[in-house]
Length: 265
View 1 (cartoon, rainbow, N blue to C red):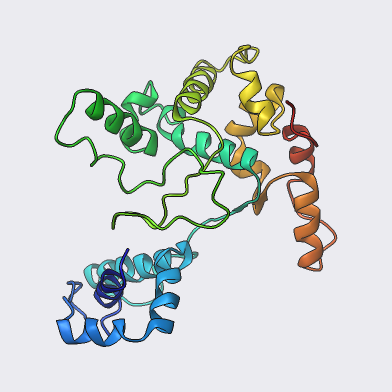
View 2 (cartoon, helix red, strand yellow):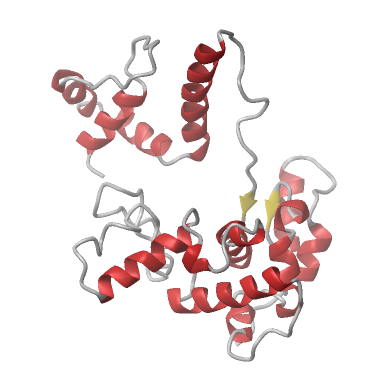
């Protein structure tokens, strides 16, 4: 995302003037160009635009103003902005992603990932289908999502070539095909309420990410309860507790069950 677009988006959300009717205020060129000249501030704003805390703060303020205006009252609309936990390992990130992508199946609103229209997996599947049929929308469906497959040869971030997402670096050290197979199998276990052994062709994927196959489904299904603040390996939770001057944090026992100590080859 270029400096001009960073400045334009920031000034739309924070126009520097009171807007009481809930409408967007389009910044003028002079405001945008003036902000672009301040490179130090632009870099600070760029980080904020990719920060979930700043996003939720702006979103909640907008919703609160609209809701309070409709109800004829004032005060805080939400008791808390959002529930967020830190994810510190590849295995925990995979489990978190599968948990989120199974939300509609778990709620009984969808039978398969292909019909989970409000989950990111639907957009990835839609994009793949469009590309296979050479649809004109082939690059549209998932362009706002980070690529699923991580670029391991890049030590730092990879700035997105487009303007719809912050980075092209990716998320997981696995292919989209492997992720979809794992998600489909896990979804079937969740939907039927039965626990079967992990298929032989899927077990190596979990082992490579240091996840105990036997604990995978239960950890996915109970992810928010098991890891209320931080999801990762045992030593990572201990390290974070020490950094916070605490003796321990919730999640140590589930982490010991879910994640192995060493990656398997």
